[in-house]
Length: 56
Image (cartoon, rainbow, N blue to C red; front, side):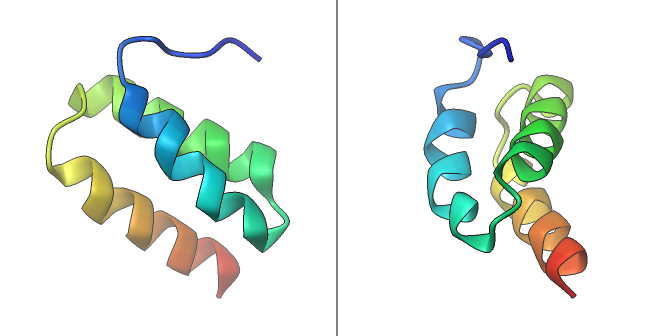
């Protein structure tokens, strides 16, 4: 799985989210949104919403 060097925040966020047991799925979702938003402040908001929706 290629690592996006464009956004270091993605790698940092994917680490704590791995505790949900869905590391790859969460990582792909966060990385995809990261590339689309280019690491804007919206990244944190969307990643939280994505994980909450996926876990629920």
